[in-house]
Structures are given as structure tokens and as C-alpha cells.
Image (cartoon, rainbow, N blue to C red; front, side, top):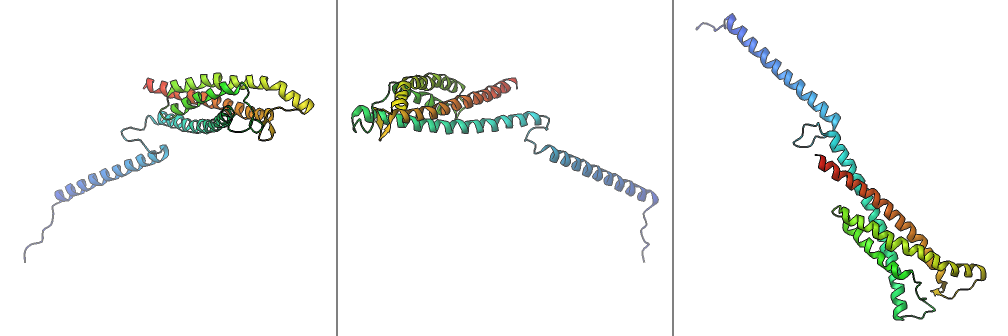
Amino acid sequence: MGSEYRPSNQNRRSHTSAFRRTSSWLLLRFVRERSELAMASREGPRATGTDGSDFKHRERVAAHYQMSVALKSEVRKLNIVHALIWLLMAAQVTVSQLGLVSHRLVAQPYQWEYPYLLSIVPCALSFLALPRNNISYLVLAMISAGLFCVAPLIYGAMEMFPVAQQLYRHGKAYRFLFGMPAVTVMYLVVVVAVQVHGWQIYYSKRLLDQWFTSTQEKKKK
């Protein structure tokens, strides 16, 4: 029978040393991967192509984006309500001017209603500004809202005040809308419209601030 092979002491030592080095390397790599995984779980998902050092900046950008989306939603809802009020006013003026129904049913418009019809301009500008964050359109919408929305309503409240006073004191009304005193209906419209336009301007101003902040941060980068 052939003699049994027995590795020399030198070979055994070399194999043992290589095994220890391999084991140490694997253990070190395992510990490093575990530490990186734990760090990633604490800090959240990391964007591709970044080392995580810009986490605070990305968190701030995400907050601005969420706020912008929320403010856009509020402005859009108010614009829809504004458009509905405008449609009602336009319908009254059109029906009255064309004489489609009796004036006893739909009274002649008050003077302030004609300039208020221009309030569709800021509404349209606001709708155009929202999809692409157009600062210029939003600024024009806010300025024209003051001119074509708020100003006619203030004038309308003063114009109708003597009529409302006469109705309150003597119970007399000369203009009607579907059997109701026109001054009562239009004062309700004024109250609702003032609130709608006030919130429109408020949320538009906040949205404008968000867009300005985002623009300034982009310029700093």
C-alpha cells in the first residue's frame, strides 16, 4: 500500500493563516454592511446618485412641494366657487338684458354687477398659473382680483345699502329675483363672494411665497 500523505507543519500553518485572513475579511465586510444598513434605515431611503449628505435639503424640498400641492388644491377649489358665482351673475345680466323673462321674475342688475363680470379675468389667470407654477400669472391674478372682484363688491354694498335700509324699515322692495327681494339675494351673494375672494387672495399669497422660496433655493444650488 502507498504511504499516506501528511501535510507538513509549514503547509498547515499557511493554510490556517489563509483561513484566518479570509474569515476576518468576511467578518469585517459583514459588520460594515450591517452598519450601513442600520444607518440607511435610520435616515430613510437614499436618493440614487447621492451619499445621503443632502438629506436635510431633500427633506426641505419635499416639505415645500407638499405645501405647494395643498395650497394649489385650496386655490383651485375657491376658483371653482368663484366661477359658479360668476356664472350666476352672468346669467342674471344676460337674461335681464335680453328680456328673456319678465322683470318681475328677474330684476334689472345693479350697477356694480357689470364691472364684477370682469372678475372672470383673475379667475382665469389663477387657473393658468397653477399647472406650471407661473409666478407672473399668479401676481396678475391677485392684483386683478382686487380691482375686478373686491372693488365692485364694496361699491355694490354701498349702492344697495339705501335699498336694504328701505326694505328693513318699510318692508318695500321694487326689484325681485324669483319672488324674493333682489337686494336680499344680492347681499347674500356679496357676503359669500367677499369671503371667497378674501380666501383666494390669502391662499394665493401663501402659494406665491412657496414658489418664491423654491425659486431662491434653486438659484443657490
